[in-house]
Length: 339
Image (cartoon, rainbow, N blue to C red; front, top):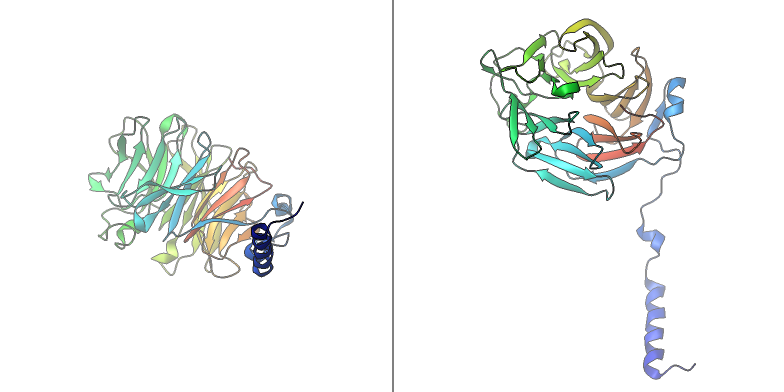
């Protein structure tokens, strides 16, 4: 087959242009060498959760302070909060896209789905716990205690039948950045709420700044972080395990599992083996996720280039850890399964 003059010139131009075009690999990000440096095994018990060929993926960035991820298995998406922007965001597992779910919200922080698939959120301003109903309406579950406004609900767990337990440390009242600056009118506390209660029931005030909260796989272990050093520099950051009574409405024995003067512990979740995966701050080599066995022993870390505020397990097998870390969302497949 012979080429005409026009075809010959077009082919020559294409060849010349390709010689100056950057290669496909030059445009792609540099690959991570396996295993990625994010894994840090501290105790042999963590070795089985480390996956040799799992990359740390930065799914999205552009937030101001990201918090409160919660997984919706039916929709295959996670909800998280960008607190200063008063937005709830949505990460779609199938597409990897992040979009605004709700804007101009009450500086929501922690989120959770109840056993009926309804989203429950802790809001800083106005200080309240709200639930999004199936018809799209909004129900206010808790906003006062003994007639006084709540401080700024922070994080929560949902219980069978729609009851919740939530923390109220007041961070959304300390500045206008994450809510509305005002004086706290109540002691910092942990509360219980169920249908039929006009106000929540206060469970304890023994923690200085009760923050992240998670329920263990046995249904009777309630874990709460205390970010006391933010306002009480002489106190350590701690993780306490409370024993829930059989009715799940009252707290029994309290055991301090972890304390530190150099690290901060925020939101967390549990895996099927009872390990705690905890958002952690403390500088390079510490920022990310600390993993503690149920006895409080540090067994491993997931190191991130940003402070991590909260985490949850996502995906069909709940073996993918999603991390809300300062300005970015990260994911990492693990050998663990969340509850």
